[in-house]
Image (cartoon, rainbow, N blue to C red; front, side, top):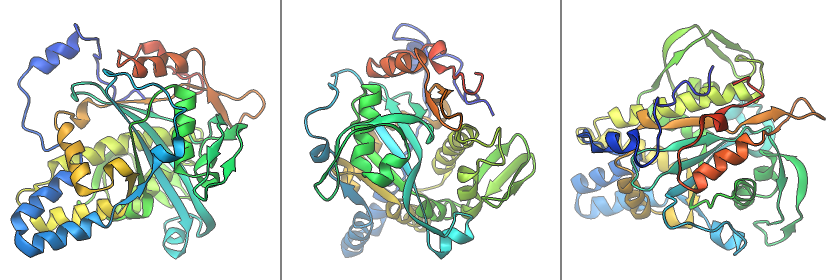
Length: 365
C-alpha cells in the first residue's frame, strides 16, 4: 500500500491552491474530535443529570504533566507555526482480553506501537500526520522517569521501546530532539479502549486492496470493502505479517488508512439526533484517552475541538517519516537524510512539505 495514497493533490504555500481552497464555501462541520458530541449530551441532559454525566466523562480522562517532566530544554515555539500534537497508540498486551485479540496475553507492560506527529497549520484548515515507524533507531535523550529518577541518554534504541522503558514524557522529548518540532499537546489512545470506541460507533468501513491473512493477529480479510467491528479493527491496526514485506512499514499504511476512515465515520454520526449513542461514543473515547495536563478535561478538549472545526479528514495528508534500512541491522530502520530533515523543517516553519521529503528509500517511494 502506498503511504501517499491519501495525499491531497495540491498542498501549496500561502499564495497557491491552499488560499483558493480556503476561499471556497465550506460545508458545516462538527469537527474531528468526539468530545464535541459530549457538549450536546450535556445540553440535552440538563440539571443534576448533566453534572453527573460531565463528572463521569471528565473523570475518565487521564492526565500526564509533560511540561514539568521536559523542563526548559525544548525547541523554540514560533508564533505562527500552528499546533503540533503527538498521538500515541499504546498497546498493552497483557491479560486474557488481549490474548483473545491475538495480542500475546503473556506479555507484560505496554508499547507505543503507533506514533503520529499531527501538524495543524495556523488557520486550522488542513492537517498533516507524520507516522514514525516503531522500528526506527533513535537517540534517546536523558529523561526524567515518572518516579523522579533520571534515565541516561542512549544511542540506537528502538523508538517504541522509549515508552515502555522511560514513559510518555520521554517519547515527547525524543520526538522533539529528533525533529526540532515543539510538541504542544500529547494524546495517548489505549488500544483496548479503542476497540470499545469502534463498537460504540457501529464499526468502521475500510477498503482492503489485497487479501490479508495474518495468523499472528487473527485477521483474515478478502480484497474489497469491509465494515470492521472493534475486535477486527484492533487486529487491522496491529497486523504486520499479512501485508507488504511483513515489516512495520506495511502496517503504517493500514494505520493511516484506518485513522482517516475512523475520523470520517465519527463525523458522519448523527450526534445531534442520538444523545444515547453520543454518550456511548464519548464514554468509550474518554476511557481510552490520556492527554497532557493542558487537555485533561472535557472543557479543554472541547475548546481544542472547536478550534479544529475547519479541519476535514478528507484533506488530511498522511506521510511516513522517510526511512532507510539500517546498514548494521536490516531489521531496523533509520531516518533517511536529507529527506527527514527537510520534512521536519517544513513542519517547524508551517511551510509546504516538498515532494522529495515524502520519499522513503525503505519502501522504494
